Image (tube, rainbow, N blue to C red; front, side, top):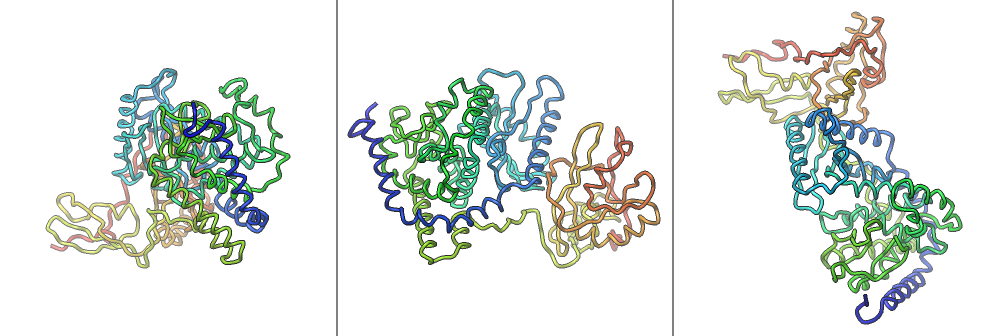
Length: 540
């Protein structure tokens, strides 16, 4: 197919010329890249996922599979929930979403769209029930998208999960990219930084009409393929024996030292990528397309139409993975971010701004975001109990369970509504109670300040009764808290032998309990015994 106003070769030649001119224009800036090396290294080090980030996501995958078994039963037709995307590719950060696919075993045919929607609605009903009990939030069905998605956010960790059905194509692409990262470590690191940059500038969302993560990673791979010397080979070389996992793994194993002659640093690769993209801005509308399968620019249209930005799918070459960018306004917003970033880098080199300001502009602030479920107060917690006759009064409470209890002294069950709280530092964290016979992990949220206030008396009581009493701190890590926990009592737990053992955290206490303390059929905990001091009788 001919490019408008000339041949395909003319378009590709023009792209090469524009790239060369842009690199020559920024030659002085590129010679001072060593001054920015520390900035990029710090961003990568600070935002790399910690072990708890991996554990949180693994726990969520287990929980979703538990929910699937509750819906379909533990039988042959029960689906398996599998991860894909940035987590599977190991290019995720603490704030990254978790992409999950609900796959039915033995299904090799194309799954009809109406069945996908029906499956997502089934999961949505279960998740809305958990949402009503405060374990998840933001349950939303997005059925109008090209791939129907169910969105939900775990309250304990703040991780947003995107569930789709039979998204085996996404899983396959993620596995291929994961294997390609073994060729050169700069590929996953640069992808991580480019995604952080795009997210900081709000241009990393296909839902908002900008670039999705796969298109950003593909542009990174394309850039590495076109460095001199190249760092990555064309994917056609990797796929020489096929695109199944075994063939790709074999192809990758023969290319592990492919880019070792190139000594460019991460910051040099990051800046040259921005320069490359800036240089070809005017060529996208006339059919320019980045192909990582061929490892070069190509001319391409989709249904005889050009796209605002063209990035060829390396598996299904008939697809444009940047198809979400459909308006010139979004293209202008993307390129405005590119130009502003290059301008800020130049001002830093000129000594007009310092490193922290440049880092915050390029990648956003490194300050951790507060969890939505964390509430800071200065006084002891109180609540207003709204009784049936309209009377309101404040009642001091000493635990979250008591805060939700029914007031004493009422003939009928009173409706209790928390309309305000003061005091305490409510930090969401989970205490995994692992029923070893059932294999279920259950999590619960606790008010750490309240527990700390009661720690001394609890320890004294534990010593006298030969109970173990854990030490609670404000720095307990957040973990998933999807499932309700009717079996956990906020009292010291006896251990064998009956001696007082101070422990570092509630997790270490529960994980080290002997197996015979986990009953096969545990009796749900019914709450603390009502006390007149905690729940004063209503004055008549």
